[in-house]
Image (tube, rainbow, N blue to C red):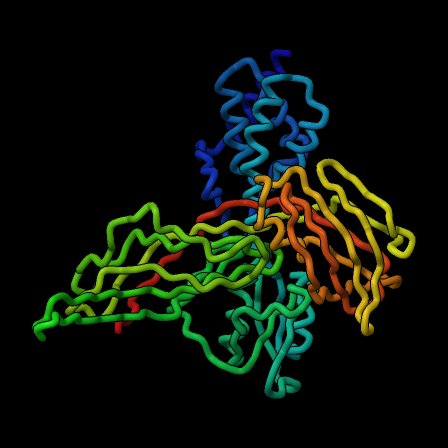
Length: 436
């Protein structure tokens, strides 16, 4: 026992890294190459066991090392939680897992590719294969374009912009196709100075809007003047992490070339959402700054944008044979789905149904209602996903929806999904921005 304890202590001494405090809003980020480790699975499992050690220092060192391992440690922690009996280890695991799950969900997609004079079409195919996204090329002939590059676990947005900058292409903002996983590239140029990449997110300054007004009195004299300066930004996200809501940017630094501070006092009441429950992949947001009479450039603009993303989708109810489901009710957990009819009108196929969600946030959760069309996926007999053409439905209170949803083909299978959401504050930092 003594030799085992000594070996455990030695292991911790070798691999221990200084503790890092986990922030529930801003998770820890690894290097650009992603999380790596030289520890073996057995060593990681030993660290999990040491979370329940009688010695406080060993417990803390084990926890710190597991935090530093990040998503690498997550499968070991989840596996241990399912079978662990030690109350202290269970407590530590329940404390560690949520933060590491957040870190894993918010890790950017990485690409690894080395090529010389490879046709652009083949490079696009390889990006599609590794990212699981579709890349659509628009305008101009790219048949004879060849690409030479060397990517080693490069973040998705960094890799995509590098490719675009080298070959005169640009990313079309807001286009993700009907399947929500298609990224469109087209001929054009973009300015690197006005975009900031943060993991799976991309923040772009699209411009400033300056307004000045003067009001006159009834006697013709001037009475009051008003000036305002608005900064406009765009938030874009990788398709696997759709945005559910976006709040107003919070500026922490806005210094001009003359060292003038353009920050306004924070108004806690002015934090409007730019979304109402449905998924999207690009948002335009804005916030106010203090106008300047003399400055012509902002030397430093920094801040954060609070967002809520759909980190994971989980199938709740699956109806395998819709043609035989008329009049049937399906229940799973707090969700109840009833298929009232399979309709066909003027060549348009639809599903008349009612859906009740007992776990929604409140008795009249309109965000849930707004997202219903995106939470339901329907497939034909061959397994092809059908495009949702909308329909007519409404909420009857108590989070109950009744209506008809229409689709592009003959529906054969239906899946209703639950969304696991996550809050995050996207940081951004820009330099040398021109003012109007």
